Length: 350
Image (cartoon, rainbow, N blue to C red; front, side, top):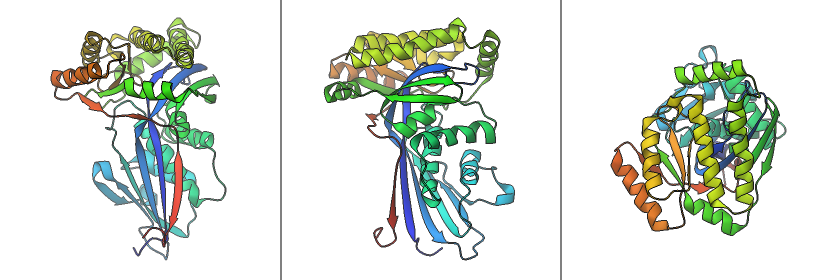
């Protein structure tokens, strides 16, 4: 290929501390979710070229996997189905060719909505090549439809919404998959203090959907959308929202603990032995709260809300990383923005 005629860049944050998770699903019917968008974000760069009859019209460069390959229409969805399905969903102009490079510093399978962030960033970037512009809500909806309708996977709605909107959100799903998003605006001092107190610990193994999750889904489906298990989870979202508006970190931590305990009641394996050990260390260092991210289970990650003393947080993280060589602190920053997309023409990209 020659030099690109333009370059499109897009980024979208990942998600942590999803209090009320599991209630944003088809079997919950309705739900309330509190979550926080953070960096490191997912990055997408699209180099656009005139087509000129090239066979390699669409190239995917999955940088985290060290894979670069041509998307062949008659053999689509065979390497990275989510990416390839998203490209097909967008119905791009046939007179363009492009190379899509995707990258994220967040570990794969960390239960922080990384795949949703990548899909949101990809759809947002590709949208620059089509007539009209999608709203953040429309991008999130498209990303969720690709997972559920095109690929037949289990997916809630909150990860995509968090990546599209960024910031701290209270999400009300009034009827699956339709939801409203209320950004939580707090004073800078509260924002900065929350950012300083939060920690994200990767438990060293990629989380994958398991028999445990299928068992939980079957149980919740049989119990119905208003069962106590789901109601216990829903309640933590509003409590988290109210605690943050009040600047009450102890109350936010209590809501996180309440949510994690409610997750454990769905199935004991939802809070893994690795997560339980990291929680023990957090408790010993006076942490105010902890949340097993996402659906829980083996692997994944843990959000921890620390007390006021910065040196105690650092000591806690050192102890956690010394406890198990696979445990890793992932530095995070709260995202004031969700999906961001911008374009460079060839001249300005030099």
